[in-house]
Image 1 (tube, helix red, strand yellow):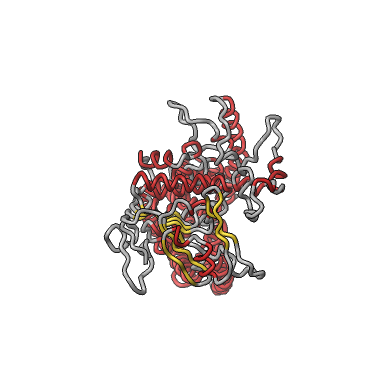
Image 2: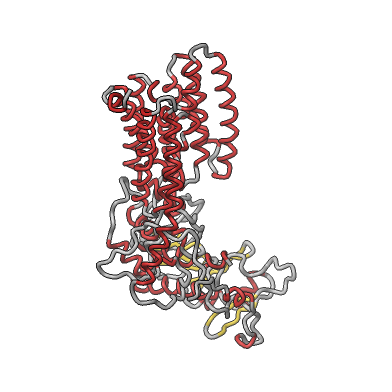
Length: 228
Length: 367
C-alpha cells in the first residue's frame, strides 16, 4: 500500500504529504531477501544502479556518483564489483539497502532486512539504517522477527501476533504485561545490558511463541507517514 | 565452387547478412533467457514454430510466415498458462508435445519436397526466398529496436522483480513483451539453424558469455560476438564443405566457444586471484564479509581499475588457511554451544546471541 501497489480497503495513507504512487522516488524499498543465483551476470554495482535509473528506458550504460555514494554509505565498496550471486547474505543485504538509498528516499520500507543474518551482521545493518535515518531525516519502516537488535532504536512499535496487535512507543509495548496481554499467555520481556529480549510463553505446543510477526515503525513522527 | 566465388553471389551475401542479423538478436536476448531461466521456453517456442512452419508450408508454401504466427501464439499461451515460474515449465511441456504432434500430422499431408520438412527442423538459410528474407530483416530490426528501448527495465525486472515492481517497472507487461520478442527471435533463428537447434544461438553464446563476466553490458557484447562468430562462421564453413549443413558447423562452433568459456572462466579467476594476492597490503578480515569472494579482497587503489568483471570464483570461498587448506575450524566452533557464563542464569539461551561472528551465510552453506 505504501508502494502504491495495493488499494486501501479503508482509511487514508499519505507519504510525504501525498497519496502513495507506484514507482514514486519518495519511497525506497528493501524487499525480503531472496538469494541471487550464483552465476547471475550482474555486479553489486549494477544492482545499486537500478535504484537510480532501473525504471528508465535505454541501455544500462550510465555510471553515476549517486551509486558510488550509496555503496560507500553501506560500506560495500570492497565488493561492489563482484557478481552479486557470490556475495554472502549480509553483503547482498547491504547492496539492497544501497539500492534503496540510491534513490534518496524520504521513506524507506525494509521487509525483514535482518533475516538469516548472524548477530554481528544484524547489528551492523541496524546501526547502518539508524545512522542513515538520523542524518537524512528519513522515515524507516522495519518489518522484522528479530526484536532484540532493533528494540532499542525504534520510535514506534506495531507488534502483530496471533491476529492481534499492540501499538505505541517501545516503552509502552515492549513490556511483560503488554505482550502477555497481547498473546494471552505469559511472555517475559527481559532487559539485558540495555537490550530487550522477548522470551516465549509456557504454551508447550509453542503456537503462541513470540516470533509470530512483528512490525516496527522506527523513524521520525514527522516523517510524513501516517500508519494506518 | 570456391568460397571466394560463392562470396560474390548475392544469395550467399544475403544469407550471411540474415545470419548476422539473427545472431545479433539471439545474442541480445540470450542473457535475459539465461537470467530468467527460460531456456525451456525458447525450446518450446521453437518446437511450436515448427508446427506453424508446417502449417504455413501446407497452406501457402510459406514456412517463415507460418513459423512467425506459430511462435507468437505460443508466446501468448506461455504468458497466460504459465504466469508463475513453477507452472511455466510444465505448461510449456504440455503445449510443446501437443504442438509437435500437430506438426507431424500436418507434414504428413504435405506433398511437396521432403527436404522442406528437414529444412524446417535443421535450418537452411539458402532455401529462404527473397521476400521471406525481407520478413527476417524486418523481424530482426524490430527485436533490436525493442531490446534497445527496454533493455534497462527488462534487466531490472529479470534480476530483481520485487524491487523493480516497487520502483514502478511494469514487470508483468515487460514479461509478455519479452516473450513476444523471444518468439520473433526464435522464428529468425529457426531459419538459420532450424527449429530443433535454436538453442545453439539463443542460449549457448549467452551461457558462455556469462562464464567470463558479470558486467551486464560485457555479457551482452560477448554474447552477440559469440553468436556472430557461430552463425556466420558456420555459414562460411559450410561454403567450404557443401555436403554438410551449415547448422552442423554453427552448433559445433557455438558449443566449442561454450566449452572454451567454461575452461577459461576458472583460469581467469585464478589469475585475478593471484594478482589480488600480491597487490596491496593484506587486509584484516572485515567482520561482515570475512568470506567475500577472494578476488575482491584487494582494497581499491587509485588509478587502478581492479575489477572489470572478467573472471570470478565459481564457488564461494570458504576461509582458506595460509597453507592453502580450507579452514573449517569455524564449523566446529559453530556447533559448540556458547559458554553458559556468557548469559545470566535467568535469561534463557538465545540462539546465536553469544556466538562468534560467522562467516557469511554463503560460507555456512558450504560447510
